[in-house]
Figure 1 (cartoon, rainbow, N blue to C red):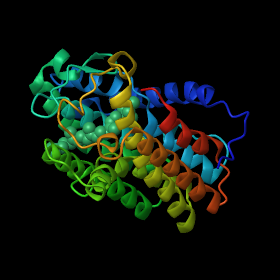
Figure 2 (cartoon, helix red, strand yellow):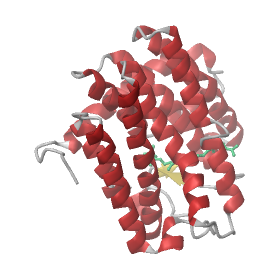
Figure 3 (tube, rainbow, N blue to C red):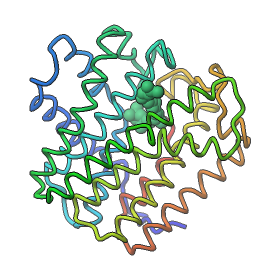
Figure 4 (cartoon, rainbow, N blue to C red):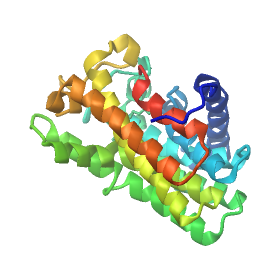
Length: 305
Ligand code: GRG
């Protein structure tokens, strides 16, 4: 099912949104420069500003616009920066020798390859509290109430923590060399990847002043898109080249259970499509007119990196 207007230009939309996100990341690194020890600043900058699709901030701002209509103010992009800070730290740490031991990300050397393990480990840690500070400060400029601002910071940290991304990463590391069943694989990825993607929708919805049912619909969309994203990631890891991916495929080398190893390529593709339909159904149920969110759901599974 798709209600995306044939005229919606996702590539043009992303080409306009990504520089706005990058500008917000630069603003945050500047505004909070005194919170980043100067020895760690190059590694932090590398982790935050070395490319990437900027999917989480883009989703956050798209949710804000879906709720409020019109264009998003600068502060909405500043709020969305908090999600990218958590994402950046997670990739810096994920690539470290004690985790995935990756040399390449986004077609370039990983942060620890450029700036060393110590600065990367510590710089990643600096980004965690900074993300909360960024969200707290930006949400004040968006004139959110204190209760809403607290809820945003709680949602961000919940998604980043043991019940979310960190917990998912632990399950992932634990699962290396073991066959996980379908339920365990879903649980792992709902935490590791899905929780932060869903938090992007939560923050955008809260900032936009969404009613509870609209927020719930956006979060249902986020959960479906989050899992679809990971199914697509597994398909890409199994089928794309290192050149396309900008990193070395690693699932097989690390002996990880994936949607492809568990279900096969065709079934994994069908699951990704059905999750996209689930996401679009959630939007339609809330009568949300949101062409960017509809197109982004499809993009998540159609992307080549
Ligand atoms: C101490 C156990 C422990 C964990 C620390 C390292 C870590 C926290 C978490 C890792 C979480 C992780 C690597 C999640 C993967 C998420 C994912 C699919 C990343 C790729 O996202 P894209 O494609 O990346 O959006 P770009 O490059 O576009 O930004």
